[in-house]
Image (cartoon, rainbow, N blue to C red; front, side, top):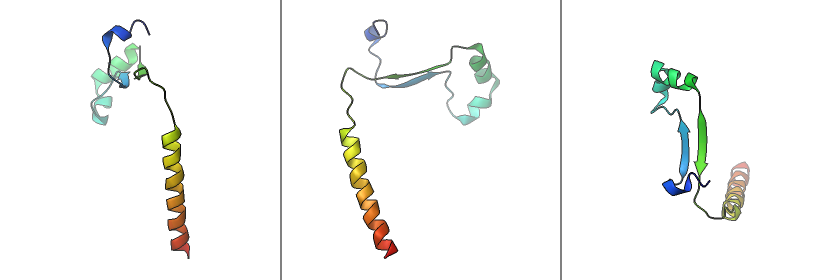
Length: 75
């Protein structure tokens, strides 16, 4: 953590090697990078608490709406 903090990397998911699109994954350059090693994926978030409350409430409301719609269609 101490090594990455000075770089102020923005939030996101980073990976290497990374192809621009699925066609590039079949290129010899990409394959050689992949076979060379040190393949990684890292998720970076700023210092904040992660809460799922909002997501769970939205999922509950979504489930109720879909349930009502399915009951309407079934009736």
